[in-house]
Amino acid sequence: MSKYLMAIDAGTGSIRAVIFNINGKQIGCKQKEWKHSEDPRFPGSMDFDCNANWQLVCSCVKGVLSQTGISADKIAAVSTTCMREGIVLYDKYGNELWACANVDARAKDEVTQLKMLDPNYKSAPGEVSLIEKELYLKTGQTFALGALPRLLWVKNKLTETYEKTANMTMINDWIIFRLSGVLAVEPSNGSTTGLIDLKSRNWDISIARRCALKDDIFPEVKECGTIAGEVSKKGSQESGLREGTPLVTGGGDCQLGTIGVGVVKEGEAVIFGGSFWQYEYNCGSPECSPKCDVRVNCHAVPDLWQYEALAFNPGLVMRWFRDAFCAEEKRIAAQRNIDPYTLLDDMALSIPAGSNGIICTFSDVMNYINWKHASPAFINFSLDPEKFNKAVFYRAIMENACLVTLGHLRLVEEATGKRPEKIVFAGGAAKSKLWPQILCDVLGIPVDVPEVKEATALGAAIMAGKGIGIYSGICEAAGNLVKTEKTFFPDVKNREVYDKAFKNWQTVYQPMLKLSDDGVINYMWRAP
Picture: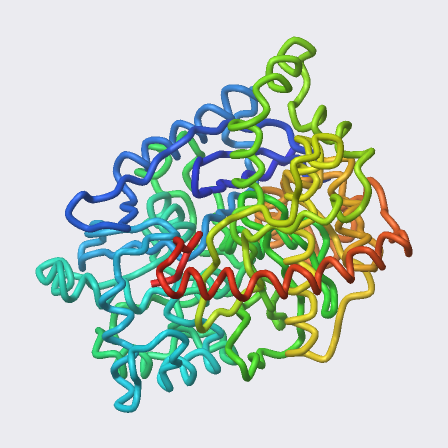
């Protein structure tokens, strides 16, 4: 009997169920968009509707089985992955009480409250709280994205909900719970809460106690790639999966994406080029940066950790530019049945490296302990349409994302003393014929583009197969299943141009950031 593996991938904007064969080939995918609404009472909130979203999960699972004609009894195992940072709270009966998606930002007051646990903390721009630094060095997380401020917010604002709370999981764990009734957390996504000790890869309840939070709401941690449970009778009736199907712990979307592009060993690195750009560097120890400037997470590969640096919004900036200024390219692309970005890439290929000196101020190099980005702008262009036109601005956006990534490469190198010999580039941006070469020239190291660009679901499928013994191990499976489509090599002359461009960008960015600090112009984004 043929065996297939299913990945359930709960992203920020959509949920999808994907079926792979055991050779890593995608057989079918069913996807549904979902939205996380803001509670009008609480600015910055991003609620996760468990009941409505569960119906979408089940619709995708049933849909992909129907689409492929694969019967449920041929699904050998299922694993899950999701956006990180989103959490679900449950009562003692297993009913969901409250949930939020990943970039929920309602807990601004609570961030300040937590920082004030340091008696010497002064609420001033750039001021670092000693408690936040101490917790970062243990967990790899600051208060910017973690669960601590959100739990404190529930305690302060939804007292009855907080009093009833008996368990907390991440959203990928919630899917397994809905299918099986088993409450457990895996360490790769769980580590983004700021409540897991990186060294032990397990909860540190002293952190909750120190922050005046409940210390008994944390379920068992099961290592990534282990069987958490089986599909229950109820889970089978709702989802269409066979009762008894093994459910394997997966991981955070970036960690499983890393597995899906074969970056599974110490010293290897990947850049995921999507709405955000994530630089992930594998390291063999959980030591954090003394400057608290870069995130550290548990990898989904046991005994590995990841330094992570995030560039805000390159993909969204590109989408904005396309929709705001490229109506003609969109029209032509529709006529030719091609992607508008393909036309824009062709236009930008003839533009020289450095985009005739344009400097963009979009994302800054990550500073996790004091995370903010200046107002977006284009600087240093003249009213010469030959030198400064649509294609030049388009290329400048590409180059800016790569310059920020160079900053992240150096940031992690400063913390670890190491840099990768080459880098894997995946995600939507890796589909471009131009962007990988620009990245290669800016970083000055070879860049591999894998055949599978959207790798998170493949990573989850590998975890499912590893959990039931189809694959002997994660590294072996990734090595056998992941293939490189093309390798790019740096152009020495372009590298010299970009080294100068990086210095110019750094010089320009700081006064722009100060103008944002002074309230003269708006931040592009600022952590709570």
